[in-house]
Image (cartoon, rainbow, N blue to C red; front, side, top):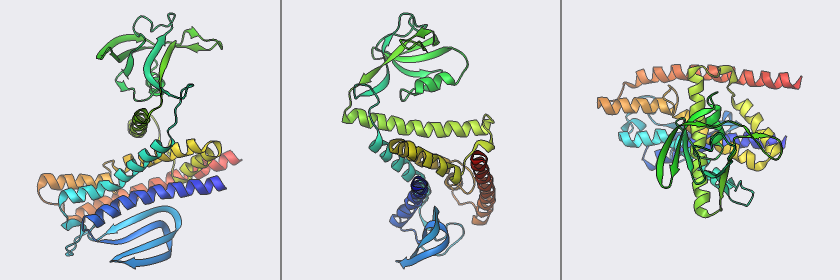
Length: 344
């Protein structure tokens, strides 16, 4: 039960962080914020301060930052629509930017060396077994940059890149003696038997000592990698490689977070960081009702030199919100059904 509560609170905090990004940039930019909610559902507490009604609601999911003139016309000089275009763009993007920042800070806080000697395993090759199929192409000192065009940011990307195709022959780009070298046909096949009798590719990666600079570099690479994984998942969904039935809503996410908390708190916070960055990426998708959809209308305004009539933009966002709510109901139902099936 403690892990479930922790998961729900963590998920709720990430949503509040997102809304706070909108809130603080609106306030700093002179835009009137009418309401700021923490949670959803019935209001438990409320307090008005300097023209903003602050509400604490019953359900720990969600939140909202309601700005004057955000979804319609307003004559108020502090309305959202009266602010300069760059300021409005920043306000719209601020929620996602806060999620990116929080995700990175969590990664920075929990990042730990993963090498046997207290350092970080990186994508630079320490040695290649002479029996390896890659021995003729790769050598010690090569830093693997790309495999089949897939950028290698962290050590685990090596296996990720290989899993993207059934072929064992790959185009590999390395940094060798300070220069980028592209090797068009490197055979990376598990044919070398290790001391435990397991088949390996036969490549050993270097371990670099822990330092402030290395810690910061690995944290940045890991955070960027999280964002890329989310973007890749969206691409797989759009292309049909994964179905809508494989999506998870708040219930499914909370369950995974609770299970992870039972296993390891470090893994739990890594998952929280991933979800925070996930929220940032998803909210910037150019879809109606999301921040990315609002940003599209602002970009159109910049091109046209005049805003899209608010009522038309409102229709689009309202339709998008209805579709989004239907999707949320569907995935939540799928989450509940999966939990019920496992419990029986």
